[in-house]
Image (cartoon, rainbow, N blue to C red; front, top):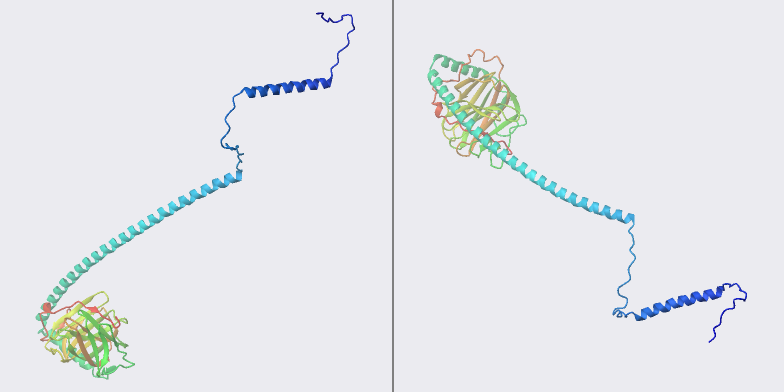
Length: 393
């Protein structure tokens, strides 16, 4: 077989590139590569088909949170934390305040209880001291009265006091009130309280009554004020065995301080200085000049001349005492329930005013001076604790 050999003598023509042919070559090359890939794919084992179409789902695009949303979230967390802290703080504060209040209240209760106990102890000690001092004073006064009752000095004092009384009451009285009804000038207290104690005009006489044991019922004539005077009245203890009834003088406006001259159904008598804080027994004795028993009319008189106080019963001199605590005030009457409710009637109240120099010729005794026959064992005379009981209480 004859081979074609190129003719070396033939002229060589330059080979020019055809752009279309190159494109076709590229296509063929690409087609070959695709074919190769198809073959390779055909030779690979096939995977089993997904039983659930559309699974797994395609990945989602995650949206980035904005800066504002993140800040709002942080602010919300902070606010919630603040609310929780505030609630806990309020709870702790309220609990501590309640505990503090409870502790304070308990402390105050303990303090009040302690103060009450101390006050009771002090009151008991004071009462015992007063009773002891009063017993000593009464015993001393009794010894002096029994020793001096018949001495010439005592008789001279009694005679001088009696003469002074007669002289001072010889004129027209400043007050002359029969006490059968209230008057605009006298203005006697009138009314009763819930215990049926009080002062009232009834059946043409003036009544003072007290139903609480140990209480005193004062009844004042609000229309008068006196300093040096003679005050005289008639009284009858209608009920209340052992009770006391008498007159008040030199009382202040609210009846918190005054002298109280009283007699009893057992012919004893006394003079007390009563104030808002104490009851001082200045004189306590007995006299045959006083008519004992219920329903007996006794006339009692006090002559107050500066610091000298003279006491009389049924125009007989009882005793005189120098006393400077009170110098002027109102007049009145009063009763004390000692063992049973008391009711006393009063009538014929009279007052004579005196000049301050009237009694200067009477020598004041150094101690209470009793008239002849008026001495008694003062240590056995009852001296009750008195509690004022005012109208309306």
